[in-house]
Amino acid sequence: MRIVVGGDDLPLAERMAKLSRAYGAEVMITGDGFPALVEMAERERPDVTMMTVGPSYADHDKVRTALDLRRRHPATGVVLVSSSAEVSYTRELVAAGGGVGYVSGSSFDRPADVVLALLRVVAGEFGLDRAVIRNLVGSTRVPELRGLNRVEREVVDLVAGGWSNEVIAAQLWFSEATVVRVVGEVFEKLGLEPVADPARRAHAMLSLAADRTRPPS
Image 1: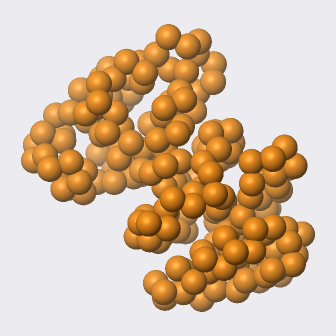
Image 2: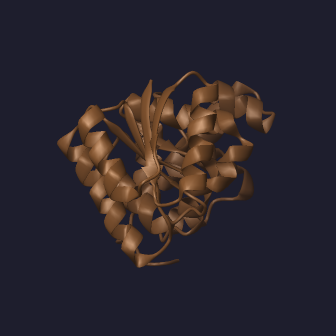
Image 3: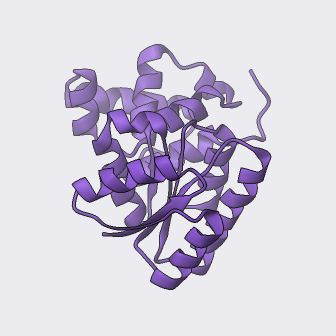
């Protein structure tokens, strides 16, 4: 996997580069700011461009630039990296379709989550870490999601992360049969069509959680 890393937060970019190299990725890093990163991504056409962004208003323009890069070069995935997990960024990414991702600073405690997010982005799916998903689902305006109980919310977080039933069962100490039952019940409550493919389930769940048209419950 070829990755270009950079942006305006050089320490964060360097940490992400080091983590990616530890898992065998070929990493090119630029410390000259956001414009230099975009220029390198245009020139190198990597598998993934990882961009550090902050919570300021100006960084919203960077997110749009990142998504524009993805539209112009569909073979290059885009992953945002920030110290926080901005819900507005997550909604923009979900609206843009697959091949995009978002990981927060807390994901460094779970490096496998970052690697999995990168692999999902390369596969054309969503690559979001747990903190990003939790913030999105926790801030949703969709009444059906807000009304789920604690166990159901844990299952939703993992489904939205693209995990299989086997992995969800292992993480929650359930049997796979229990996971299948709970996932089915959750999808019925949310009015979603039941699907077996983890990537399609994740897309459906994230799209629902990002829906801003429904009033708060």
